[in-house]
Length: 122
Ligand code: FES
Image (tube, rainbow, N blue to C red):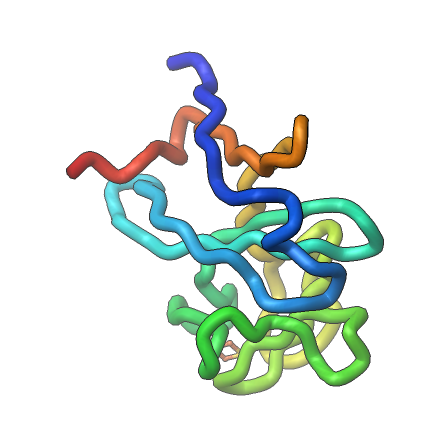
């Protein structure tokens, strides 16, 4: 199955270290939330599923950065992840976040489907 490019939001909606933009995906048979952020100018997205316990990470919707603005934090038990790679940096999680490919062009941000990551059918 080839990759599709899905419009997500305007580039201006993602501020460096700011609130995330949420979107829905179908991943390996499950409907899940994902989130997009901007960090050091680049845009990145991940499934909103902690790799410690499979639950959403933002207690306050759209808030994923810790106080330093340099790490993503799971609000449940404090696992820390790198904003640009999803790598686990500390806390009880051991695996990286599942990354969703994004691209940015002409003032828009797009997410890209993959064989195990599709749009949610309505
Ligand atoms: S569920 Fe995220 S750190 Fe435990």
